[in-house]
Image 1 (cartoon, helix red, strand yellow):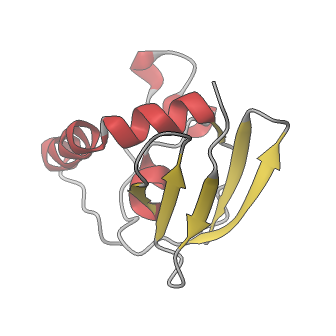
Image 2 (cartoon, rainbow, N blue to C red):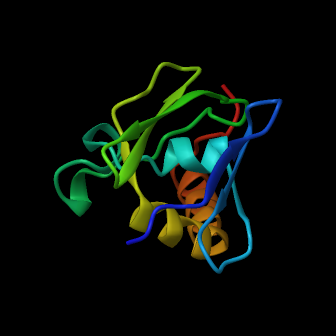
Length: 117
């Protein structure tokens, strides 16, 4: 997987724009990145262990750090920083963002949880 040409975090820290070579820029909200973090804390070690993360409507990105040539570690303002976002995962997330977002909203509703704290 080729690295993005550009990763840019918006001034309000709530949006990350990713541009891969030969592709249009894609935007991912900090909230989606946080609730879909590839960390074991969120994803668990099996599909049954995956956690629905509520209360992240206002989450922001504090920093983005490279991990080798294949990924970035994103630190959020709730201090979650254990997810390693590979280029392939970021591309999948951007391409599937509407479906993943709708699934997340459905999970929140099903579990009686809220996007707000």
